[in-house]
Length: 146
Image 1 (spheres, one colour):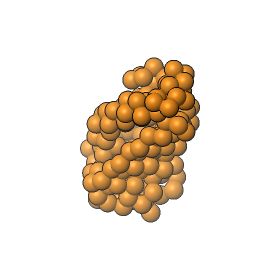
Image 2 (tube, rainbow, N blue to C red):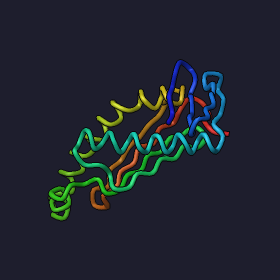
Image 3 (cartoon, rainbow, N blue to C red):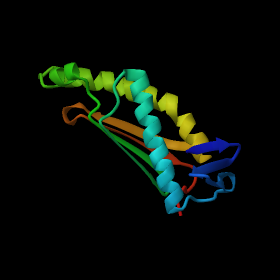
Image 4 (cartoon, helix red, strand yellow):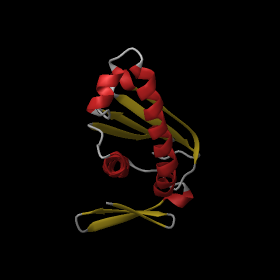
């Protein structure tokens, strides 16, 4: 579990813990990066289940250099899949799900900034309803990984 206190990220594994001071621009090593990716994955799955009543079937989180990339597949409901299959339906579902992505960004960017002790300076998100795929890319103001 990852717990952010002040400028420190406390990583716990079994009964051992280590403290990473990210306020001084300390970069995550591979083990720390993987733990945070896993924690962010669980967080995102819980977020969508809580907000939409349905989680994403597959979530992938990548922390790389100064970026956090979130990919999701299998997020459409059965009615949305039916609507997307119609000629007029794809833009309707795309617009609705882009609004969900906007809200996700508003709700969760502060969480990621706090966890990583870095500010998002650029971001973009996109939806491909015809492929049941979405992604959110955030660029931070510092390098996050070694």
